[in-house]
Length: 117
Image 1 (cartoon, one colour):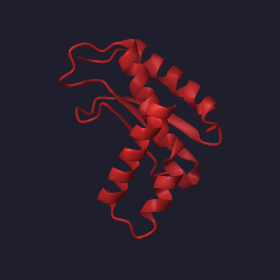
Image 2: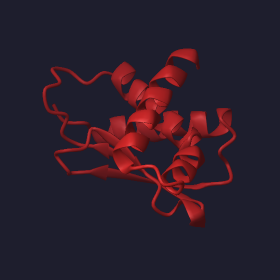
Image 3: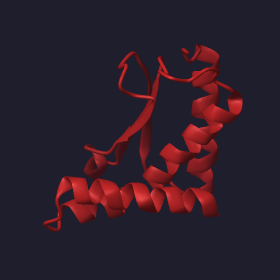
Image 4: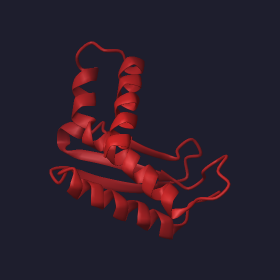
């Protein structure tokens, strides 16, 4: 299935909700509706020191029968939880932790926080 421009707008609106809720207004968020077939949704923080967080919503969701508003909202929430802990993740990777170890710890914490928030 493919995400539509309308769903991308919903994704950005839902992200904006969590930017406010999580008090992330100090960052500049850049949103992209990407053709990359390997991305369902993704956050990139390689410009975090400059205060920039890039968020991607993939256009092609492989192995997804139907893309609903609930799916879009859940993915937006998941990515914004990543934004919430982005500074932690950045610090963790600069403290002699390997990238796979940081990724796993980040995903575990994100999934836990998703259930709590």
